[in-house]
Figure 1 (tube, rainbow, N blue to C red):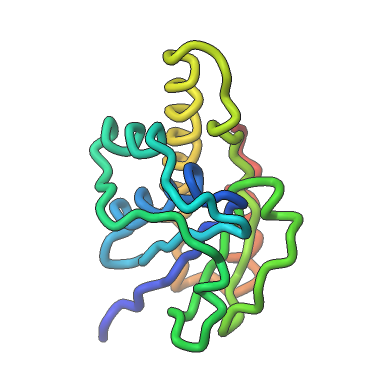
Figure 2: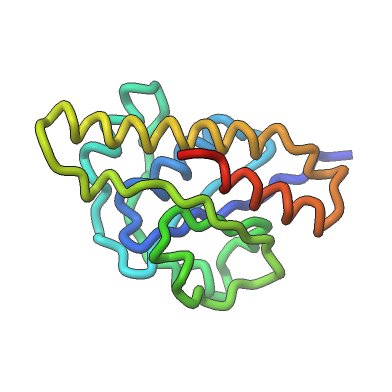
Length: 166
């Protein structure tokens, strides 16, 4: 019997930093069990260089990452999502497009490093902090016995992960 691969969509408004980092992290850490994607309601069109730097410094592949609209995932030929996770407060409050299937959803708010100001070191730290928060939450998500939990229990567990301290 083959193990199913679960599709996960990380949403953020700009799709240039947090959702991109989450996509790359889950694709690396959850390889063989999960396939991650990311998108934004108002994508910037480019991935923030500091987000790419944070991933590279932590030895996470940046291959194929690009900023895209969440509309891509509402098309008939889009992959069916099992989970949809918002990582910014703006995206959590927006009306998402209707996605095929009935994906479970949760909000994992992460402070936006794109808005960081200060020295180059302070800005770099903001991206590192976002990376570490996402890494911790994704690691917790990966530890869930997804195939053994019922829908309501899993939904509750996903929401609890999002309530972890930032």
